[in-house]
Length: 452
Image (tube, rainbow, N blue to C red; front, side, top):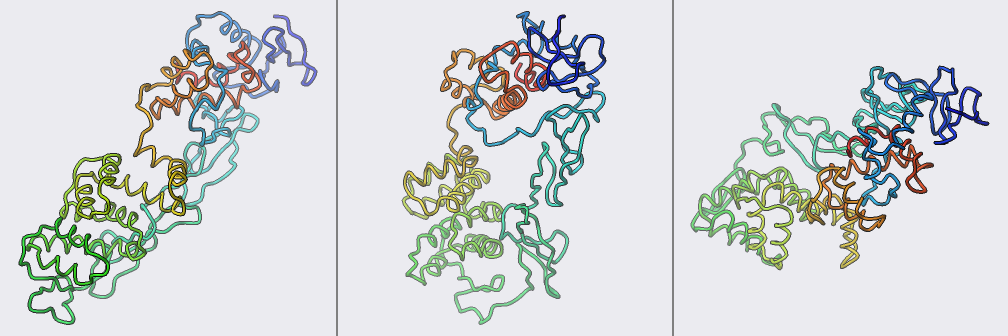
């Protein structure tokens, strides 16, 4: 193979006159990065010498080649990175971890986790660049939260001890249980609250019973717990006697279940209710008092979308909303109230179309989980590639192909596009070419194989 010496590097590095890629000059024993033209450490599984570069060129020019290279044309290595709908996760600084025989040797652009530290590749060797804080864990070459609790303001009993702990946010933004606070002498912990057996003060009236320190009406009616909850929920704020009048109509079993349900709410979610955070209170109930909620009003199998459709017909009726809650699964209700809590926090000052747009963008993952925008037609990156191959360069068509794919398939497409643009952008930016295909086969072999 005839080579011409480059002008920018040592004489031992040459440029192939056909592919324009850099290679090792004949009779040298070095490894060369074909794109940057720098002398690099030789990998245990591949050496970027002149023979390897020429073999890769022959494969890309031959047409009908086998292996990862065979799908380079069908995946359209020239497609723009914006063809993927969701590009919010920036992977430009991460590359595949070397899984070859010698894991201490690495290539340009690679990064990895080692224990709880992030390492980047520098001149063929792994170098530690950051250590994750104690409340973070290293995953995919990034420090991420390892949350131990669900939301701030939650209080739970410490397992096996007469003590409580609260869910707090760390300086890193993670959620962790705080230090245990012991209950008082003689007290026990139940439903996130320290308490001792107590009576009622002042003593209960003639038509009342003392239950867990509270006076409740003597059962004299037939209302179930669900009916009692709906009755109380429909009480106007101006009628202070309405809740008691509702309870006076309750059955013995209904009042017992209601008392348990309200006891859990008071112990765990009261601070949210006192602040008027209705949706966050309901999220707290479904996260911490689901057993009591289920015993009182029941539960079903409805998901977030079904619950949203049901609630849209209620018009403020507590009886209707109770029926919607009763038809939802625990996860469906958590997804629904979690989305509404996010909208309250992110878009509460907006209304109408502005609030809808804010919800779709500011609460995207929750919104998409509740209101999927398109059916899943493709479950693999290769199927997305085949779909896009029929688009004839139409970007809107290519986006539709990606949008109709499963999350895993979309992730594989994103990984390939990120690798191609970051490692081979200078060759693939202006359209498909032999140099682009060769560079992709060398630097993005893992991502290309996932799409084959």
